[in-house]
Length: 273
Length: 254
Image 1 (tube, each protein chain N blue to C red):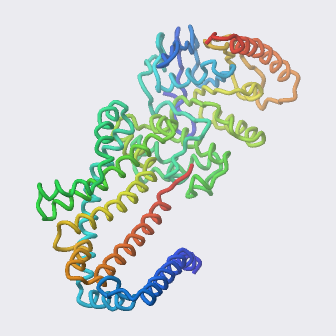
Image 2: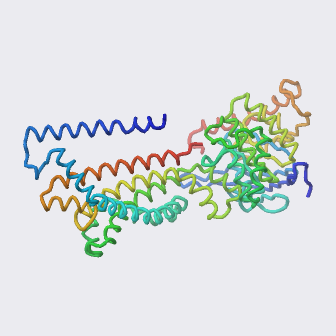
Image 3: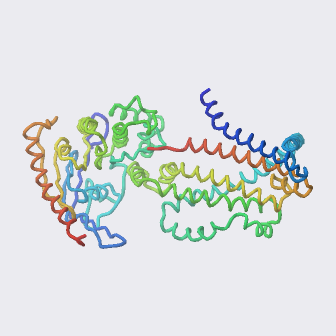
């Protein structure tokens, strides 16, 4: 297996075949969240999924992480079917999901301990990842003492520290202010290039998708399918004000507007759901 | 220094309350002149306190009561906390156990005293049993509530960080996440246990603060009754303060 200079393993490919997900609610009709979803993600690729709310992007990510199972179809990572959550597939959540009973470095060490890294090696290793997100001076702080941006940087350090081959990111910067968000996007790109992980990233923000992605997957309204796949070939760092960026933005917005109008029409119709 | 003055700040209202109660008490005695065996003046109770403290009797009884509560409280915690953790995570288990608990919960631990005497006589086990009943439910219910209020993303974070088996999930994620709520339950439980042991000792005991009070009544020594009551109150406040302190140590916000 390839290793990069940080000594971690490189990303793995993901294969999603004809995946369908139906939620059976206790009262009312079943909800079809995803339909006929096919997607191949290459090892080390940065894929960003955008779509209207409720289109099943989070459902997709939760199935990839192994929290829930598809109703039909198969999900494979490097050829192996996904059977449940695994430390080899990390995740960064919108609400950070840090463990408030642990210090900043304690959060980063958590996965290392679970992975069986000897006690003496945990702290220096965790420190290395805190340095990566520039939080080395906050190692022994309490989680509640951090700002939102610092919390998410801790969560990113925690996710990368276990050296997973894939990292899922569920609207990770959605709760942050615009400036922090911009800063963390640049940080994430830098870290991703260094570590060559496969990243599946979910967002509502079209500029964010264009700024980060190798490939953007635009989803339809529910039931979620792939509406369009767009390869972003612009060189990094991508200039938000450039014409190419703007053109792409316009294209994706028009795709999304179509889907949004569908959802709104659906909601407008009585007894449609 | 600041810490000390903060403690003083919290203790001061209690001092005012004590002064007020003693003043009213003295006033009632001065105006009504009740027989000392019914309501002795404050100084007589203070003298009684001094006598009981000097003979060591007071510490003996207080220690016995505390020992019973402490033992039963720990015993109930060792059962209620694991059960509560499991019930909070498993809806099926909760559905089975919950009706049983709901049926038993409204029955005051005091209502169990007659049965406890029938089953265990007036030995230690009967009193442990009563306190156990009184401490079990608050601990259990707080633990269940604590587990259920855990944000699901915290559980998911634990899963992707390698807690794949239930044992590590409980130990590394569920228990610490629910701990603040568990400590609240333990505090409430200690309070109900403290109330229950006094009642149990009033009825069937040869030692303990409850016995001290009951004995005072029998020998027409209202001062002894009042000394017992005051010690119960003061110890109760002290332990509650201690648990509130623990609460603050174990309350984490994300």
